[in-house]
Image (tube, rainbow, N blue to C red):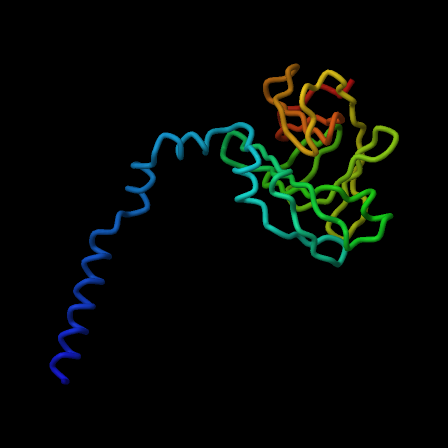
Length: 195
C-alpha cells in the first residue's frame, strides 16, 4: 500500500507543476484580454452592473453598516484609470434625521469636483435635500461640504441614481438623483457651474 501512496503523491506533484508551468503570466493575460474587457477599462461612465461589482455590498457610516443598492449605483472611470463610484444605500437602520441627509455613498480615488466643491479621495455619504441643496458628510456623519443642485425637467427617464454626460462640458458628468443633478469632474477639469 505504501508504494501506491508515494505514486499518487508523485502524480499529484507532477500535475501541479505542469499546471503552474502552463498557467499564463499576468502580462500574457492582459495582452490577450478580450476587446470587451479592454473596453471596460476605458474612461467613461460605469453602468450599474460595472459599479455594483466594485462597490462594497455594505458600507460604514455614522457608527453603523448599511447595505448598498447595486441596482441604483453608477460610477466614472477617469483618464488614468482612477474611479469614483456612488450607490444608494438602505438607511432603514438609521434615525429619520440621518436618513433624510444620507441617501447615497460615494467612494472616490481622486480629488473630485462635486458640484462647486472639491472632495479629497475617500468615502463619503451624501444626500439631495430640500432647497436644492446637496450635503456631503464624512463617514462619521459630519458635514464636510454642501453645494446646490439643479432640476432637469427635460430628463426623459429619471431613476433613483444615474450618471450621464454633461452636454455643456465634455470633461464633466451629471450625477442625478431623480431629476435633480450636480456636475462631477476630476479636479483640474472644472465643470461649468450649475445653472
